[in-house]
Length: 118
Image 1: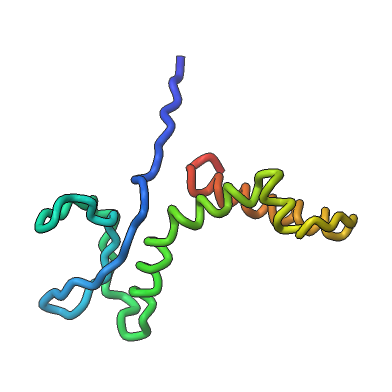
Image 2: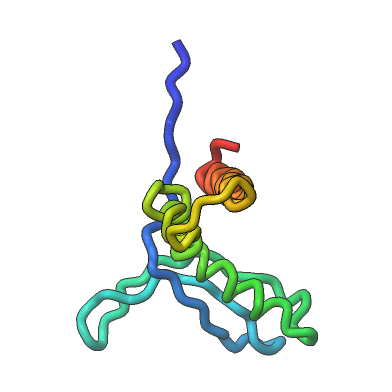
């Protein structure tokens, strides 16, 4: 019998910062420290390579990664009935229903990708 294990991501919020190495700045992403003053209890999420540093892509990627838990939570809210109603601002037309259905489809796909169920 095969048992499935559900993997979950490290709880947010996450933040990014730049560390300085011998070769210049390196973007990193970690959880927001929640320990006492002077003690940093943070979990390292990732360290990005220096590729793209001159163009700023590394820092932009780090910001996007750091926003992932917040983006996932926002998408989850969008696919609820209340979230869809808010998106529609109370209006109900066939065109709007199709548009909301398309947004929900993309949101569900992104959530599945983030949760590893895609």
